[in-house]
Image 1 (cartoon, rainbow, N blue to C red):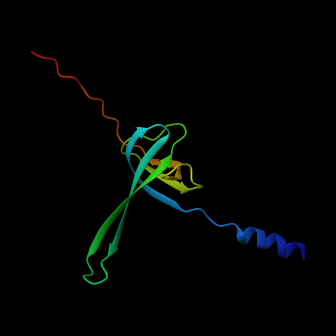
Image 2 (cartoon, rainbow, N blue to C red; image 1 turned 90 degrees about the vertical axis):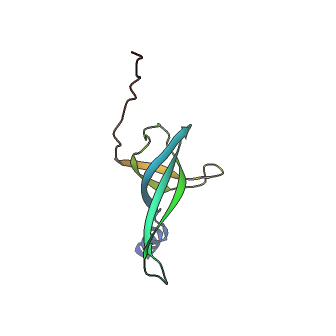
Image 3 (spheres, rainbow, N blue to C red; image 1 turned 45 degrees about the vertical axis):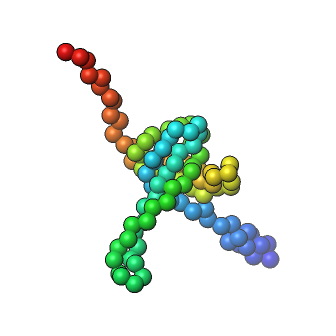
Length: 104
């Protein structure tokens, strides 16, 4: 009898959604904007259509940079628009340092 209650507890816990996308903005404090692209066939024309959506994600330490590919996880509402948090950085973007041109 105790075994059945333990199994019901483990099955009742739902999984959080995970998405992979590209960081398109890091201008806010502790917040990144991640763009997730999806491809699906059009129901009538049968052509592949690319759809994209932006998600606001919480980045506590500010580790993600512009152009990084990140994995985000669904979480409780953190603000008006933030319902996701940064799980891990899958691929880092190449950091390009701007070189100032000196007049000749």
